Image 1 (tube, rainbow, N blue to C red):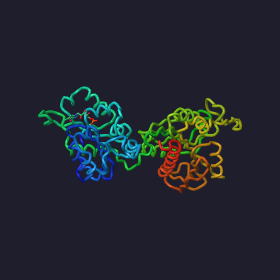
Image 2: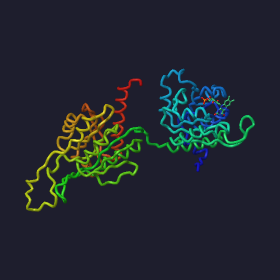
Image 3: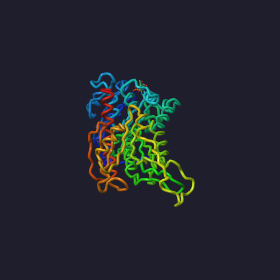
Image 4: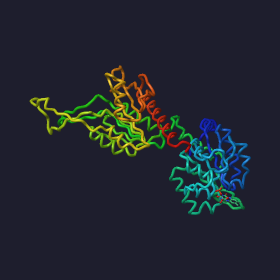
Length: 423
Ligand SMILES: Cc1cc2nc3c(=O)[nH]c(=O)nc-3n(C[C@H](O)[C@H](O)[C@H](O)COP(=O)(O)O)c2cc1C
């Protein structure tokens, strides 16, 4: 069932949204003029793109006059050589109305031989297609296959209406009415209009959380006071900001079912799972408090009182962060945490030098309300070079997560610019 939006709510939905209006070579192209006008009236910023086919049916000038910016008809004649990718990145939705059988086939096949098809192929935003053609074309299996393929990929298809067709024929193929198209587009934009910036879209983030437990015998273990709250909050924030998140957690906290969560107990399990998932991750955030030492041997049973505690020999655990750094992909960003008490910032800087991670989040656990088990934290984020990027006073761990993610985004952007130049 389609959602029904009143004009007032459509205005709220479309206000300041960048919408590409693609017009293709179908007889109903003239109806797109009215759609363009109404979208602009509803507050949208409309960028009209016409295919060469469309220019045989309607004058580009009409769209330049009614749209929010001059019409675009070619990949090649813009001042901006990367127009198609820029448009694709900055647009909230693409509406193609009318969509010709030919353009639908090109979208389905991923052909990018003109501006509109290139933008469609380069974009991650929602796409709404309103086909319009003669009944025979609409019913053709080739067209129907292309429509199902696009629908399967998440493209919203607005079925044509039945009625009088060009040439005196009658049947299904008329462009759906402007009202139906705008409502459907409004629904799609509203659905995707989260106020949360999706700056982690297409990014895979691996977060480790919680304190590991290192078994001594069947009853006892060595553990630490980490609750896992900061790591879990980071996983939730990254997920809300569009990331695909893997959460490897040693904490008993519940995890959001939308987040792929891997439960572990020991440092060995933590190391195994983190190193298993890290090749897929663009960003690895090691927020877990992994034990530095573990009992050398596991006693199968319960050690009795007569057992001398000095016999409990310890050995170092796997250094997960160093392992991650030694296998780091050039595009990957690794963030480590350092909870320090005495000697705070200086020790954190030493850890940074030693581990060579891209960002280090230091929390001074000697401060009140900071670190283990609290809902609040206070962090200092250090760059790889040891510079303090951000100093965050005591606040909620959820807010701290967003500040950490902001620093990660800035670091990723810096790298992207350094690597790609103008690309
Ligand atoms: C008079 C006329 C009307 C046409 N009407 C339609 C139409 O309504 N729907 C359609 O899919 N194709 C229609 N076509 C065919 C397309 O214009 C043709 O396939 C063109 O290559 C589409 O180009 P485009 O998809 O790049 O815009 C029509 C062609 C002509 C000559």
